[in-house]
Every structure is written in C-alpha cells, then in structure tokens.
Image (cartoon, rainbow, N blue to C red; front, side, top):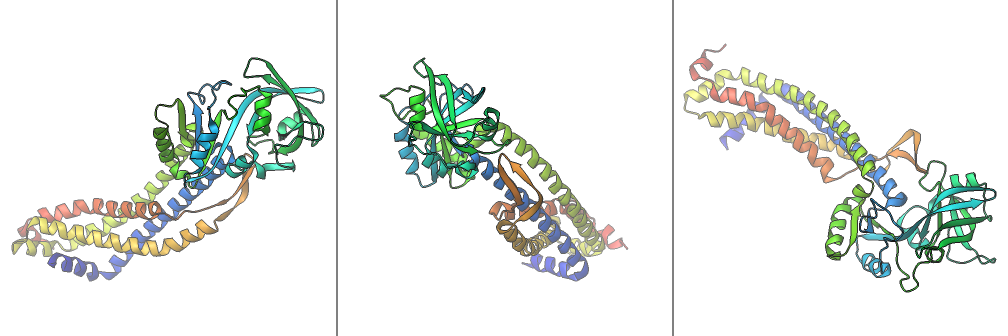
Amino acid sequence: MLILKLAFRNILRNRRRSLLTLLSMGGGFFLLCLTLSMSEGSYSNIINIFTQDHTGHVQIHRGNYLERPSLYKTIPHANKLISKLEQQEDVIGVAPRIYGPSLAYGKNKTFPAQVIGIDPQREAQTTRLKNKIKTGRYLTNQRSNEGYFPAMIGFSLAKNLQLNIGDELVLISQGIDGSIANDIFEITAIVGDASSYERMNVYIGLSAMREFLSMQVGEKSQVHELAIILASQNQARGFALKTQQQLGNSDLSVQPWQVVESSFYNSMQADKKGSYVSMGIIIFIVSIGVLNTILMGTLERTREFGVLKAIGTRPLAVFNLIMLESFVLAIVSCIIGLVLALPVCIWLASSGIPMPEPIDMGGIIFDTMLGEVSWFVVLLPSIVVISSTLLVSFIPAIRAAKISPLKALQAV
C-alpha cells in the first residue's frame, strides 16, 4: 500500500510531464486502435464480399476434388447432408452444385464454358448470384414453352457467342455414363461483367444438369460441391473441423474458405503484415517518449532513492516502485485513448469512409472502408501499450534498484 501511495505521489509531483506522457501514450493507443479497426474492418468486409460472391465460408467435396476435379467425384445422398447442415443454427445457407466443363455454341461461334448446375433458391440464399444479373430474370426450374430448360450465361461468354436474352444456347460435354452430352437451352439472364467470376460460366438448374450429364437415376441427389455460408466468416475453421469430425471415416472433405481460396488468403495475410509494420513504428515512437519520461524521472530522484536505500528499503521495492508508476501511467493512458477511439471506431463500423474511386471486385463494387469494433481491436492496443511501457521502464528500474546509497546521496 505504501508503494502505491509513493507511486501516485511521484506521478503527481510533476503534473506537466505526467500529462504529456499520458497524452503521448494515449495518442499511441488511439492511433493503434484506429489503425487496427480500419484494417480488420476492411479485411472483414473484403472477405465477406469474396466469400459471399461464390465461394462460401466452407465447402464440402469428395476426396481430393479441390486438387484434381473429376466428373465422377460426386457427393452421394447430398440431400440428407444438406438437411443436417441446414438444421445447425450457425448455417445461413447451403448451395449444392454440379460442375461440367463444356463446349458452348451460339450463332456461328463456339467457346469453352464452365456449366454449373445450381439450386436457384438455395444459391440465392448462399451467394450474391441473383444480385449480379445485368439483364433478364433469375433462373427457374421450369421449362420454356418450347420445352427448353432456362440458362443464365456469363457476360463475356454471351458477348463472345453474340447471344442475348431469349436466344438458344447449345452445350456439348461428356456424360457421367461415358456418353456425349448435348442439349439446347434458352438464355433467360446475363450475369456479371467482363471481370467477374461468372464471365465464362453457364448456370442451369440441378435437374437440368443431371439430365444433361446423364447422371444415375437411382441417385438423384449427387453433387460435386456443397458451399456453406455461416453467420460469421470467423466460424469457418471451427465449423469445418467440427463437421469433418461428425462425418467420421467418410471420404468427404470439409474445407474452410482459407483452404479453398488459399492464394487469396495468403496474399491477404501478406498485406496484413504491412499494416503491422506501420503499427510497430507507432509503438516505437511512443516507447521512446515513455523511456525519456521514466529515465528523466529516475535521474531526478536519484537522491531520493539513495535515502530510501539508506533507511533499509530493499532493491526489489525500488524496482517495483518504478514499474508500478509506469503501469499506472499505461493504464490511465489506455483509458484516455479508449474514450477517444471508441466513438470513432463505432462511427467507422456503422458508416465507414467512402472511397474516392470505388474498386470493382469481380462485379461487386467495394466503395466504403469500414471499421470494426471488437475485443481484439480494443485489447491488442492495450496489451501492446502496457507491455511496451513496462519493457522500456525495465532498464531505469534496474538502475534505480542497483544504485549505491552513498553515490546516490552524493549526486547533484
């Protein structure tokens, strides 16, 4: 208790210096909190845009389908698995998909295309495909009056084949039974733009896709992929691990988006390291100011420490006194910084900062830099400020603890 009183007395002894130190450390906390909020908020926003575009937060495939896709690596009894997944409260939507590389023919031209069979309703709940329709109407499972299944075609493919809404699209591929798959579809919508993921894709209903690829009649629910969207992208790894354990010895593979889109995730992590360098520079500047304050305060009180040592004060008590003063300054500065930073972070999380030039991310416009308010954003700057303050105070505290009473009393 006595050490605590001495610590507060020494802090209040030179109020001007203590105030400047608090402002310096509080400013460092404010900048760290603000930088971290903008960084984490922007990355979370980009991840949400990316995962909700087409990937989903978690994907389920059979075996090594991700590394070596094959028409024959299908998930059997997918409907039962979808029902189980949709019953979990963290799951927002599950989108089954069937893939089939094909040759698309329109007018007098042919181009390779990726044909994707989707459940229109579930796909709309899971991804933003429905929102990316440029012209036309969203996909349905109903045949046209001429008996053709509807199809949605990517912007670039439609441009290359010179096709428009209402035109016929001929697709040629390989059936799962080894036969040649071919059929005519009616274009009902054009999706995305020249830079979007869908630019060379064709979307048809699951029933149309199974009929097109001659999938087995006995197994009507087989698909190549299940894309799952969760309440939060932070749940992806844990949900994937839990689902994989629930499947047991099944040959199905459950992977989070960090694995499915590993190149995007790795580039994002590399960009994050650049932000951490900036935050490290802020901490270094703040730490220099704190070191100067603590060191000057220690030198000015050399005779005081000599008296304390002469009357029997243990070196450990002197050391604890210096460290306690630094700790109190750090705590108060974190409170000041939090009071200043929290309203700004809340505003950034709700409104954000409009970008002067919007970025087109695969057909989705990223035009606002959002912040984030979380325990991570608040606690990390606190830990960094307190730990760095204690670290730079260690040397002055050691010097004061080891000082000789005689030399200290003789100091000017």
